[in-house]
Length: 202
Image 1: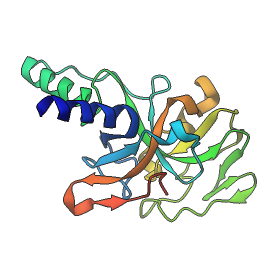
Image 2 (image 1 turned 120 degrees about the horizontal axis):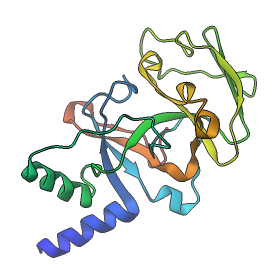
Image 3 (image 1 turned 180 degrees about the vertical axis):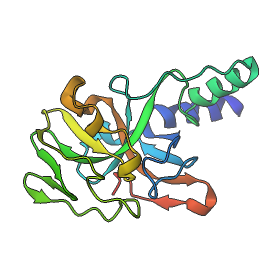
């Protein structure tokens, strides 16, 4: 039975669903530090592509995150590796982030004053952290997102080192769609913050 359970867990992780832990406040109040979110890994395999407004998990496109410290306890490392292997936590040797898609390939994004626009149209952002505005004191653009990339920002705009801060890096701050694991389907833990966004996010 244990072997069957392991096979099922591996199939779920590989093809359907994986859990990631939120390490920072960059997506508050939508996602909070310590929340565990379920990511729909099946979506990219069925033709889904990221759309503006969706929270997504993606692999670090290059030095967005500092080097991760290594746990010196071999038992803790082994347990963490096992949980990562079956998809209950992200593997420690990979760096993942969660942000919200603001614009996709070919779209032009700009922030001025307190107004964020995509293709010249103001973006309504009801998900922003209370007290933040869309630009949070950082004007930029216009930036045209390359095809095959997405522009991502955190909901806690004043506490998120997102596309805005990596414009001198590869992709001009945009993230390759190939790095996107999938849309966040919802918060699965803790119980007092359970939320469902839908299989392809919201």
